[in-house]
Image (cartoon, rainbow, N blue to C red; front, side):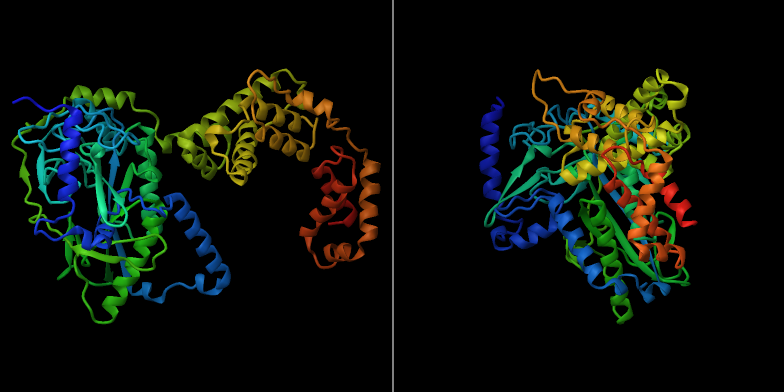
Length: 579
């Protein structure tokens, strides 16, 4: 039999699945229930005429909650009294697309934004007679992930079929690892991704099979989490680890990582008798699963909503049903999708077309030796080397896939080179902390306000280093430094045009600091105080020290551009106010 060409295959299967999309197994027309389909498969990109990007949905929801909090500040701080009686328990199932060039069981290329159905092998489309061919290269990022989590890698494992029917799974089963891969957290297993569903309004669904067969790892945690905030932090930590070892480079914001959460509640102080058990953890309430959460905030909010729903059901005398539920941004309650499948429903069986997967110890040892520094280790190094806080270190590491940290270190290196050529009296300590503050707060703030992504920002490490050196060596004021940074951040580079250096701009604009004398500072401060006796009284008699900086601001406004130094002005104000 001669296999059809790729273009003929795409045409045949497009026609076949467009026809079959309109019917379920029992012949029910899917066009009569688009809302249910939309609820069930939240993991897929659904494009409608009024489609709103996920980032915008999250921002709009954050603004709404912020407005609600301002409108009722007291209620937002009230601790739910029911939590003293009920305990939340959460387990996570995180699906992460691996960073590979090909699919798990076919040589077809993986892709994010390619033309629909342009990277589909015969096996991906479940063409009769085709068999899976394990692509060895896909194993490497999965092993790196396992090692990053400190897991014990099983030397031998097998492939299993997990049977269920959705239109986005053409085989009618998913090839996964169920029986033998039990490592670390609870389980990390290789498996296939499904197709992407695209809605053509009002009720037609198209399937893009480019994603079918893309290698995933599923990371299953034990139910040890008891806080929505902790759950979201755990997902964030897992994503950072996967990115650090190059196992998964596409995060939640692009759909490369999705999370299912298993939520249950139990009355505090109850014994394990009569309650559920999972992976050796006893005394659990009946769990529900919330599928396909695509942001850290969604993880936190969905758990919070489901916790409150379960408590309300139990306190009203009801029982929790084991079921799969959905969550939509902006909702206050999860919605039922279907009854919860058990292991029996999936009819697990060893895949007869695939032999066992045997991993050599030499490969594991080699990957362990070349494993890059993990985020916690990097944070510790940055804290010790630059003297910054752990919070700032973690922020630098997490932003822009580590680019922000690389930029910071490049600025530090350049500053150190500049300082070596300056007189001793113009040098300064804590270079790393100063640079990190400028990168995170000053430059980061400018970019956030302007809505400029980090990857296209125009301030080079050399520019920022020169600004910092001029500021710290008392050649310009802090206000001037911020204006220079804003100038470079707003530049639109023109091909062939030279960009003036920091020093050239300072001299051309007359911004170089000509310090005021002590007498000039005192005279200016006394004048401001004489004109504002009520402010003086507030500081001296009422102890309102925060108003000291008001006097400093007045002095900087009245002084010549670039001559009043805020720190010196503050010292003279405090001296005259005798505080």
